[in-house]
Image (cartoon, rainbow, N blue to C red):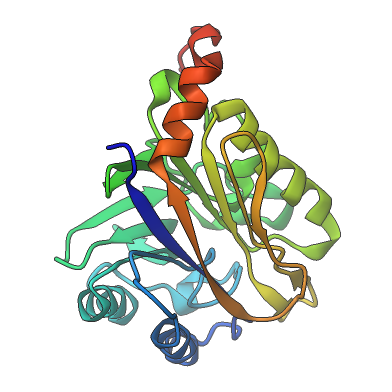
Amino acid sequence: MAGTQLNISLIQPDIIWEDRDANLKQYTAMIDNIQGKKEVVVLPEMFTTGFSMSPANIADTMDGPAVNWMKETAAKNRCIITGSLIIKEHDKYYNRLLWVQPNGVIGQYDKRHLFAYAGEDEKYTPGDKRLIAQVNGFKVCLMVCYDLRFPVWARNKDAAYDVLIYVANWPEVRNLAWKTLLQARAIENLSYVVGINRVGIDANGIRYKGESSVFGPLGEPLWQDFSGNALSQTVTIEKQHVDETRAKLPFLDDADNFVLL
């Protein structure tokens, strides 16, 4: 619907290493402090633990404390909570993004592109299906960190989505790629792109500066943070802007036809 808006609240934390309860406590406080209407609250990748390669020690289940916290928080705030966490299911481990609605309905996406450079492919099982959710007339495609480097997986064929969200633990040393690829995904898909990252230093000595960002469908920066601090920020996006951009510049119509095998 033309004129429809969506408030997206980005939570950029300093994740406490492998300490689910402490992390959930800090997220509760950060979410409670969000000013204005809460509609979609976005947490980073592996938000309960940090980017850990020890899933056997810290994995949650779909009926465990972390997922229950997401359901309770979504219901309490009457908003959607999304982010990825380590889930054990059928004796396998997944880097699983959840889209938790206030009525308790959950959408899920298992990270497809596992980061072999850090051994993620040896510990976790990849997914093979995208998740495109809907809220306030927006279609939202949800992805995780390393997926950002693979544009075919994010390809917006037939205007399948209006907003592309990446949740990440993206190290500062490769932040140029993070910022550049987020902007590129917006331009090539004529879509809003939201990238949420963490800050701080993890137990492996890897430094994260955040630089969470929101880009418009022409690649225009709508909000970016370069402070390196833990924070929350709400950005309001307009459905009319993406619709008018695509009507004026129908570049998606000229895309090559191919399918993923």
